[in-house]
Image (cartoon, rainbow, N blue to C red; front, side, top):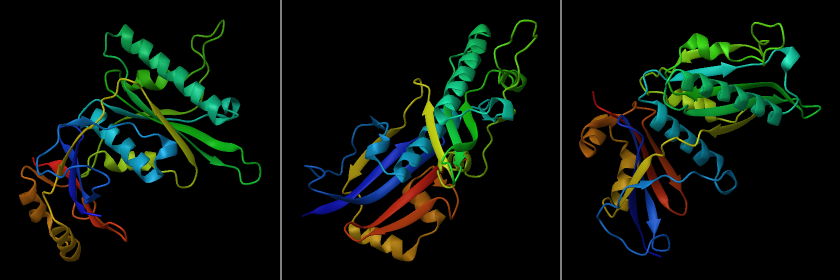
Length: 272
């Protein structure tokens, strides 16, 4: 079976790009060409058909695509008081969706664009009962509303005689800020499932990243040489002008598969 090297570039906004360089076979594609393909949208992965690693990767790419370039984007953390602690993950997700509807209502009143969000519901499970405990939420949302308003809406509907409904728990809204690797570290933290069960959902108006493939641009021998020699940042900057590794350690990884051989994965940021 003949195989060749495919380069896949995924475009996540103006300042972030991922590059996969890996082996591809004739069974996976009917033709080999050195021409680049047309840009296509990344398909949303179905959890049952995709391993967790790729599902988390999609989460990170979509978050960077939609919120990485938004200077007003927020990271909101929501917890529950003992009084309003939900009895199940499903009940907690309903509470979070109600909260998001209140956010959208306030945005509409203020004449702001529609709400865009990614919601993660997380918990740790009791070892004896299997019931979820310490349920909480993380939300990444587009900017516009001030932080005080966003925090004040984590309440129950007010009852007769109340000026405002009871607080459901603690709410903290922080400006979404990145480090030298942008917001990747936060997104990676939110998407990981180690130590508990996590779920995520998102608004339907998110933009999906674009990707483009190119076959035959590199050879197996080249990829094997890179895996052996581990070239420096300047090497990849020459390969991808205008871009640089997110960091020396985080920006490039080499993985070996007994069936397909070596693959290279790059995380690039636009040079300032």
